[in-house]
Amino acid sequence: MRYEKLEALLRVALDMRGSAEGISLEDIQRSYGISRRTAERMRDAIERVFPQMEQANPGEVPKRWRIRSGAIADLAGISSEELAALTTAALLGKRDHIPDLAARLETLASKLKSLMRPQAARRIAPDLEALMEAEGIALRPGPRLAIPNLLLEELRHAILACKKVTIHYRARGTGKLSRQLVCPYGFLYGNRHYLVAYSLSDGISDYRLFSLANIENVEVQEGSFRRRKEFSLKQFAERSFGVFQEDPLDVVWRFTPAAASDARQYRFHPTQVMEDEPDGSLLVSFRAGGALEMCWHLFTWGDQVQVKAPKKLQKLLRQQLQKIQC
Image (cartoon, rainbow, N blue to C red; front, side, top):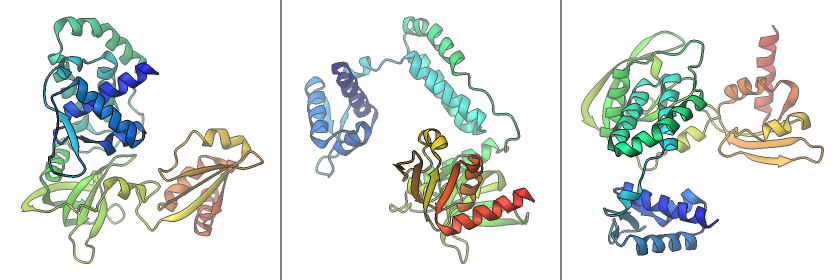
């Protein structure tokens, strides 16, 4: 237990060293699942060991601390496990066809290796090779959407610079090509990859999802936009079971006793609540939109799951089953 506490202290210190804006007590609480008092004790202990710790935002609330320089840099060694994790992330980027992300991660891994002392690099090289072989990351078979690197780079630049962009977008259903002026906010990655943007088109003026595979061209505009502070990409994504954005539903699924143990291993939605029934079945409830995507997932469970609520989802599931049976 003492070693775990020491490791946590070192991780917080490294977080403070690697953050220009500093780390708050709330950040420490959230990252390590601890009380505020414990977070305060960790901060005080780090300050005793690293006197160069300073408040990054004097006079502001909440207070944030950082470590500017000093002995912490020598403690921040790079392990074979960390390099393997970074390389694995790059391989996953390639597998899920996010090539520019994969390239950036590979470049970062190379830079980190170049910063290592030759003796340390030689020592971890065999471990890194063994770990990468053990990961066994393989490219997913089957068709994948081709998304040009240049398009992703332009969109990422526009997101970081808060620049408006005009996208040439081809609708999946009709094939019609349109030009839409949007404020890009971020990406959502999944089976399909999407741009999340605020559409400035007449009659819309709302956040929309645009399939990256259907964006044929991007024109970065001179005009900039101010990101809305109340918008959260995480909360936007959590409104839906998948990526389809629609009014949220209060969902309740019942998994049979035979399927309950498997269902407990899944995180169906960030807001889910699980409840065990006396007969061994499992109730899973959450609030989200995306009813059609829920149906597609429920098909994989066969007759081992039952929709208890809402009636709208029950009806849609029956309709989708009828289509399959026909």
